Image (cartoon, rainbow, N blue to C red):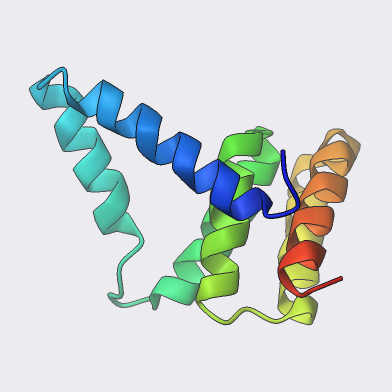
Length: 115
């Protein structure tokens, strides 16, 4: 993965999403639409929902999901301190098995902040 991990990740994700969605399977298309819609502003703002998605993804140990939510949280204006609060919640909920994912998430987040 290059220095611009987000660009590489998003290009690969977009390519694979197009491949999957080209199947025209209605169930898959509906699920993808539901997933997208879940993170839009509602009673909770998109920023809060992305932080929830990040913590949940860390507990579930899905690196692709973690990368996606780290990028989205950054786009939504989440600060370093707020990222670390979400990382802490994931660690408390998920336990020590989350630590490797926390490390990678922190590294990705720091790159976005120029660190």
